[in-house]
Length: 444
Image 1 (tube, rainbow, N blue to C red):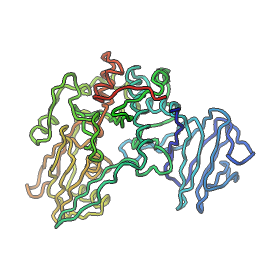
Image 2 (image 1 turned 45 degrees about the horizontal axis):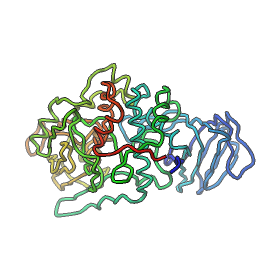
Image 3 (image 1 turned 120 degrees about the vertical axis):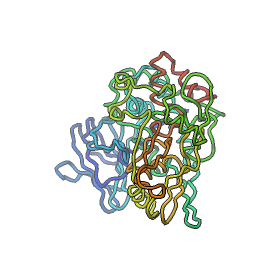
Image 4 (image 1 turned 180 degrees about the horizontal axis):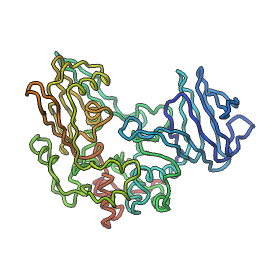
C-alpha cells in the first residue's frame, strides 16, 4: 500500500472557526488565491459555510469549502479546544500543515478538517502524546503504535459493534457503554484524546521526532495477518488491562493483562481483596516513578500538572453522584446509598459497578462509563477501591475512592515505556513487552 492521506477533525463541531493562512491557498473551484497572512472567519448559516475575511468581507460560501495549499501549506488555528471533556480542557492557538476542509453540519454548525499525509500527522502525534524530548527508542515505538492504531481504525470502519442498549429490571437499570468511533462519520480521526493527540507542527520541536517517524516509515505491528489495534494509555498503574475491559467483548490476543515489569509473574486482581492489596500498595512497575526531572522531560506540558497518576484519591458525595448520574444518563437514583463493585478484570479495573440509590439502582460499565459517572469529567481510571466515610452504614456522608493509573490501561503504558527507554531498552523490546505475540512489519 502507499502512504494514506488523512482527514483529521480539528474542530468536530462549532458555530465558527478562525484561522490565519501562513501559506498561499486556493479554494477548490475558485480562481482567486488567498495569500499568506490572510486572517479568515468561517461561520455556519442555513446549511452553508460562509468564509469571510476577518473584517467581515464575504469571500466564498458552500456546503463544503476546500482550501488547498500551493505547496505543503501551513495555517494557524485560533482558540482550538484541547482535551475536550477532560480535566485539562483548555483552548490554544495551534499551527498545522496541509489542506483545510470546512463542512456545514446543520443547525448552524460546522466542522474544520485537516487533510494531511499520515507520516506528517505522526510526527505531531508522537510529540503531542509524549514530549519530543523523549529518547529515540520511545518515539520510535510510539510512531509504530500510532501508525498501527490508525491503519487498524481505517480498516475497521463501521465494523465495531455498538454497545448494548440499557436494560431494565425491577428497580435496576443496567447500562453498558463504550466509546470508539461514533462521533467521526465526516473524518477519519479527531485531533484529541478521544483518538490520538494531534496538536500541530509546533509540537515537533525536537528533530528526534522527525527521525523516529522517518526511521520507522510504514512499519506497523501485525497479528494474524492484520494490523494491530495498538491501544495505549498514560499510566497502567502497574498492570495492563485487556481490550474487553474498555471496548467490546471480542478480545485482541496482543492486548492482554500482565504486570508492567520484567518477568512473567502473572497476577489476577479480579477478587476484591487482591485488587485492594495491589491498588492500595506500591508495587514495582516501570510506570512507578516519582523522578520529577524525568517526568518533566518525558511528559508534554499538558500532562505535567497531573502528578498523582501512579496512585490517586478522590472523595465524592452521594449528592454529587446522584447529580452526575441524572445529568449524564437521565436515571433518578434518589439518595445514593452505596457504590458496590460487581466485576473486575485481571488488572483490578472495574468493568461493572452498582450505584445503589434509595429509589433505583444503576449497574454501569464499562471502564470509561464508570469513570464518567463518578466525576464532573472523568476519574483517572476504573482501578479503584471504595471506602464509605461518615454518616451511617446505610447512608454514608461520602465515598473515598483510592485508585491506580491514568487511562484505560490497555496496550502500551506511555510512562512505563518512557522509563523503559531511559533504562536503555530498544523500541522493539518495548513493543514486544506491551504487544505480546505481535510482529513488526513494513506495510509501505
